[in-house]
Image: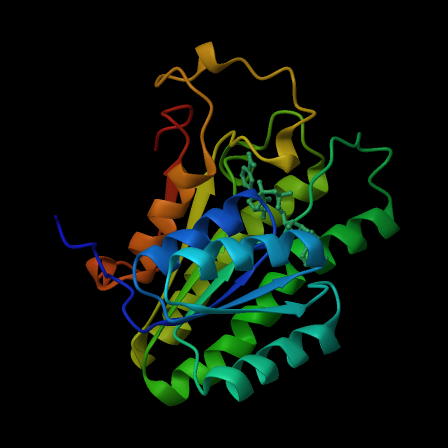
Length: 251
Ligand SMILES: NC(=O)c1ccc[n+]([C@@H]2O[C@H](COP(=O)([O-])OP(=O)(O)OC[C@H]3O[C@@H](n4cnc5c(N)ncnc54)[C@H](O)[C@@H]3O)[C@@H](O)[C@H]2O)c1
């Protein structure tokens, strides 16, 4: 039997939004690749506990759930304190928590703008900031942010607030990559196209025939790239945003 690949052997990771489609696929892929500790940071406890039992039934990986509203500063501080108390260190952060909408510009009023930004953009930033403090002291770390094809092309049907947040994540990734590079910390992003998850279940307009690879993306399509960016296989990549969209947008 071929030996299983262990690119993330003994690594400790926080994955925000890991109760959801892409985040949970990343959590399973991390465990499969040898991660020994995963912290699931989400607002959905029920789904998180399912992800944890799936992982702990199949892999030798300790998983914990930390209820975290990524829009809440105290929750984020508590998340990182809990991670260090539980696992002593942190090697990988994946910022996957996010919300979307299909609002018109009239619906994206100041309250809506601030609400979405506090999760998608400020939440990502504050998690990066907390992780950076720990990783800088360790002179090691991998941060992977989740942007979107929307941030590349201005979106199809998503609100201007969502599109802006995902464009901002690309810029934030480059800025932090420059700040964190001297401390041996890689900071990268992925920009998925249409991926089949809870988030896109009502986006029935999408026609897979418009995708050069002629199919909708699966969470695993994104998870395997996140694992690559969390591993030493990508050790000379930083500040990059990798498109995962079946060829819908090419740059
Ligand atoms: N599905 C797609 O087509 C697609 C495409 C591009 C980018 N993305 C991005 O991928 C990421 C994951 O999305 P997904 O497709 O897996 O969707 P999903 O809805 O399955 O997962 C999103 C997760 O984020 C969590 N979440 C929402 N608000 C939160 C908050 N305030 N605090 C903590 N957790 C919160 C949800 O509970 C859920 O578990 C998102 O950032 C999304 O914008 C998705």
